[in-house]
Picture 1 (tube, one colour):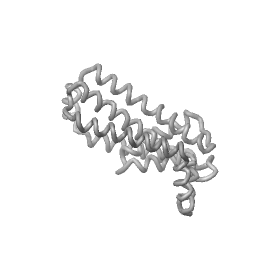
Picture 2 (picture 1 turned 180 degrees about the horizontal axis):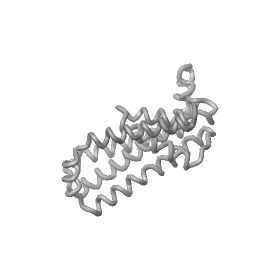
Picture 3 (picture 1 turned 120 degrees about the vertical axis):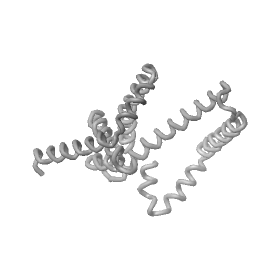
Picture 4 (picture 1 turned 30 degrees about the vertical axis):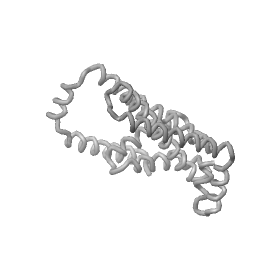
Length: 196
């Protein structure tokens, strides 16, 4: 396709999507919400949200390198920003992830490596979010802001037992036996290869 025509199409699509976004915003409500913001927490939130993109690109790059696929950080950051833009307009976050995987197919030996790298990056992000949520919940319970002391204690015990069982299974080689069983299922072979 002609590069000028492609740029024109991209420009028209981007402008149309931004126009739809601007048209759908209730500007009076937005102004009232902005007036209620406190400057320091808002600034901290904007800074932390802007750090999300480089951290995600870094995680994604490391995930790709697990499979021997190497891309420059700047390229992955640009693709990640485009994918997040897609996620704002598509019904789910899968569209942006599919775009990310598609853009890294060309250097991967197998397409499953690109898909696996996106899944690994997402899983690490989910794990980090869960740990942060757990730490904040513990802090709120300890400070007395949340009354769920018994529930947090039981959750902490359950997490501790799960981590201990996983560590024991890893150390004794039982995870390897489980993996060997999964390898016998032919359709799971690409997934197991990515996990390895």
